[in-house]
Structure formats: C-alpha cells, structure tokens
Image 1 (cartoon, rainbow, N blue to C red):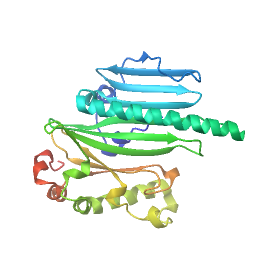
Image 2: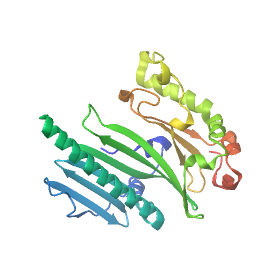
Image 3: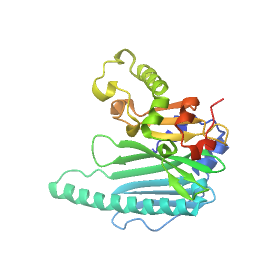
Length: 271
C-alpha cells in the first residue's frame, strides 16, 4: 500500500538484493504487544540490521512506518524517525477514536483511519545519505491522500538538510532545471491523458513551482549527486486520478552553477 516514489523518481537501477537492503525488506519481524486494547489487532515491528518497520492494523486504524538500515545506522537520524513514528501513531489513534465516537453518536458507519510512511534510500554517498518518503493517509473520505517528502543527512556535519538547501536559492535551482523539467512533465501528461492533454486549466496546465515539488538528490555512481528527482504529488500537476508525476533530470552545468560552493564537490555532471 505504501508507494515507492523515491525509486520511481530517480530511476534507480539496482538488483533485487540491493533493493531489499535499501528498504529493509528482509527484516525479521517480531510480534509486539503494544496495540490498543479496544479492538483486535495485528501489530508487527522489526528492528534489525536490515532496518525498522512497524505495522499495526486494528478495527480502529492501520498504521505503517518504515525506514531503511542506512538510516537506522545513524543514531541521530534513528532517534528522529523513532520520535516521528510515535508522534504520528499517537495522533492517528487519538483522531481515530474521536471519529469512531462521532460515528457512533450520529449512527453512521465508521471507516478505520489509516496512515503510512515509508522512507527509502535515494542515494548513499560517502558523505551524504539521501532519502525520500512516500506517505498516505485515510480519514474516511472517498479515497486516501498521498504525498511525499525528502531529506539528506550530512554525515560529516552530523545534521539534516533539505535538498533545496544545497543550492544558492530556490529560484536559482528552478531556473537550472525548469526547461527540462517542464518539457518532461508535459510529455508525461500527454502520455497519461492522451487526447485530453492540454485541456486542463489553472494549476493542472501549468508547470509547478519548486516550492510545490518534492526534490530528491540522486546518484548513479554512489559517489556524487548527478541526477535530480522532482515529485509533483496529486493535485499539484494534475488531478488525483492522474497520480503523482515523478520526473528525473540529469545534473548538468546549469545545475552545478546553482550549487552552493561548500557543496560543489558533492555534485557532478551526469555522464
């Protein structure tokens, strides 16, 4: 159910074994007893060398949260994800209980709430770990909502960065990729919409601004960032039915010129 947006956006070319290692797919699960008592539940958690994965399903809600071994190996990043996991889980439970009570009071069916977050490795270079997350939520509406986010961990500085922070300014970055990105987006729109392409209006016919996109820093060589992933979540570049638009552009001279000097060595032109 959790989407693998990171892998789509950067076009990662890895073996099945590499993919398992990156996502924690081989983690050995252990049954835990921390599911709420108000309903029957299946609660599974894994915390091994392969990564961390928590999955719970009850009559009240379902909750999933996962992050890979590379993130679990960094104490500060692991602590961050573990805190987010518990915060999100507690919030979901509280909101679901309230919604269930409201449904009972108004005598209409309650549809269990759901939330899932899966962090995946986009790139792992000697200094930086680039990650993206696919997120879904369901609060009883017509369909779940999907989204994405990203971060980069700087092992040398011991801190988290947003991908856009590697560039002199958001506008500088967007100018460097805009022409290629917008052309690729229009091509993908035409592929999905066929004869209906170009009939949209407003945001669904425009090229999104950088602040509306999830930016991913990817690598094909494991040494430097040489490709950029740009994710337009549902409702950003198209309708919900169109899904997310995941576009990858290679790093070129224009992108390098937009990189902050202190991070110049972390990037290279895609060959």
